[in-house]
Length: 82
Image (cartoon, rainbow, N blue to C red; front, side, top):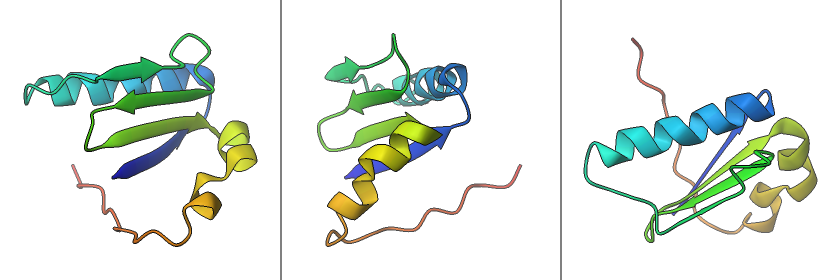
């Protein structure tokens, strides 16, 4: 499964990646691979069965993974309200 998200800046993308890792570490999950954190325009966190892609807005538009995977089934996500 791919999870695709975007941040408003490189700092935001890095913070999102850190938060994903923090939350999944809480359920004893650690990424098998972690790419792009230094540049933080496209961060990839590979958990084996789940791959998290986090982009800045420009990079997400450029690579347009949603178009490349247009035939794949989609699961909608509703964020929890706090």
